[in-house]
Length: 264
Image (cartoon, rainbow, N blue to C red; front, side, top):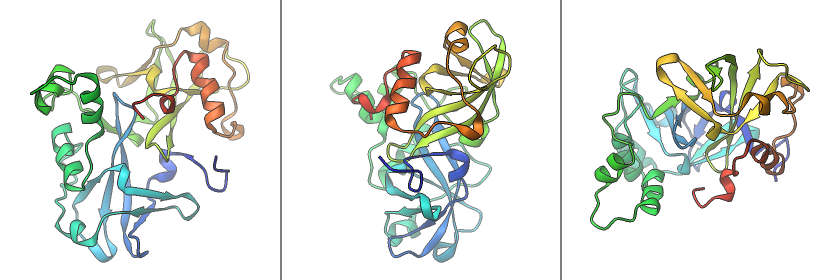
């Protein structure tokens, strides 16, 4: 387990703006945003702007997390893609995103990686002769959905949180990213409307949150009494994020840690 000087977990806001270099250490650009898969709780892709040796004007590029190696101490990511591939990559205009799942599938393929949702769907369905489009449609993951599959982490942060009963109970302060897995390790929530103990901030598994687009809110699928008895902490004096600590958090709320499932 990495220590505080070389952490395994960092907030999405800390990662935004990190520079990106190639294996030779040449400056390529920077991370503009992290796009979160709302259903899976994964970093679907990083939005990169290319400057330095690969200036690409106003275009942005969707990069799979798998090809990025974080160097937290240097506030840097190493991009494991050849310059030739990057020079031929197609970007997208700043006013045309987030990408659909179908568009993102093409990006993953171009960079030599299988989209993570195809692997999951293949494991879940395994139906012979079924196309990707048919699998996506049957699992409710079509590109023609009314609402997007992905949202920027900085858009999610600050959104209000409502209870099962519809009460406003707080907001999402931060998303903490598992750098190794490329997932939301937990959402840091502040609860201002509940008589909680031990502080006003709580680590909540992503699986316990459900986006409600029409309300610009997230539904917390945890009973109010469970939150009221949970042990919170002060934002500036939070526990060190380790898998052991996270495992206890997940267990308390009745969820299995994502790293203990075959879907990691």
